[in-house]
Length: 215
Image 1: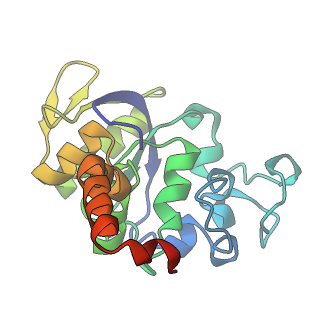
Image 2: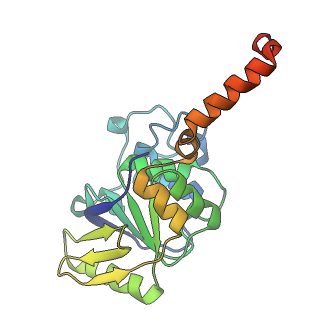
Image 3: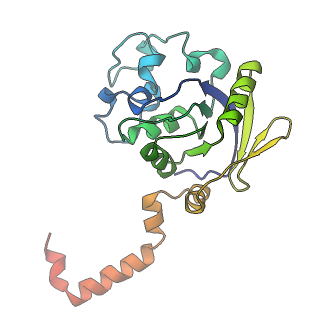
């Protein structure tokens, strides 16, 4: 998992409430558990006109919806997603943060998120930031008003920095912050204790050698 320390990126606005995980990555794309290749199908039903989209169809063969926000030229290359309340509601599919991250987003900003989606973001290298509704409204106004609108997110200092230098503080759980700063998912957290695990396995095998010949 890539560490998240300081990130500056173009902001794309998803101006809809209650965006559920089936909208983020439709159910037909959940057949794969490889954790790769989901970026082209992020928001598939909104992003393309040829529906329903199917796994394995190259993006070059799809028909983009020219009115969908992520297809607009001004938001190409966006890496910060600005959203409305209750983002990520619906089923608990971990494919949703996979698709968001693989599209190129590193952070999300919204007034609220569904709990399971919120937790899954941290486990997959995404930073979901919670701000007040009035603060999010102001950011939407600025994104719409200024093409090329960028923000800098400093996780260590827990601030969002606007281009003119204004800072917006945000809260984040200390443990989740530690994991993101160090690029540690659940497997990475376990592997910090690799030497102790190997030592325990060696002691266990020495005391119970027959285990080497059992399943």
